[in-house]
Image (cartoon, rainbow, N blue to C red):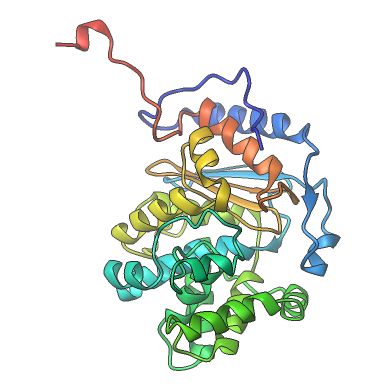
Length: 335
């Protein structure tokens, strides 16, 4: 998908965010710009997701000081879905360390759809990265806990700490996903056969499905992303959720694989770590500055929110968030 950013000037990634009024104006501009787009379709492979309002659209930006800017339906709740992968991976890295997470789960893009079985076979059973379903299942399986319930409670507490408020499961979404997640069961069994999962695969899929069914809104996603942007400290609550090195590692993985096989195009156009979910959520993170959360259920063929991507691209340019953008020094600064 080509992002509609024509005529939006690219500002270099320098300094801090502009004034509160400047950020609010940029958010309004991004919202109005993206609202005009009606491409894409609401996900329906999980039956309950097909009931979402295709016109719903909300944006939220939270910076590393905890200052928040919201517009549209930023407090409408939806299931976090695959966005949970990023934050559960951060919890895993915090628990077991950089080396074990790298060796077991990996960090390289598969170049194939998020639920690919072929990618596992092509890579000798290695899940490759935590943002595809195989890697996410391997990640969830490694979360410390003597039982599936202990693992689940650890995940729920951790993601709630990222959001700065208690998160609950949408039981309707959980039931709908549980009735249609045969492919994830197959992936988990395949990973077990390669020795990548050492717990009961059915239990792993159940815990993973629960984490995907947690209810969030666009504002929650912005707070969660801002926590990674602020070196693992939630800027709203002040709580350290994960270590600074973990935040760095998680953002690196998101930059490489956060938008599946479209991650290269995303990084080229937007230049920021990000993660999408099939319910329409999207989080975009500017290290050291803050994060943007969005909700817009219409998705492109890769499963990424259309309006969310367009809004993120607009904000990346108008606020100077792209980590690859720089301005040349002026003549007096040159030696």
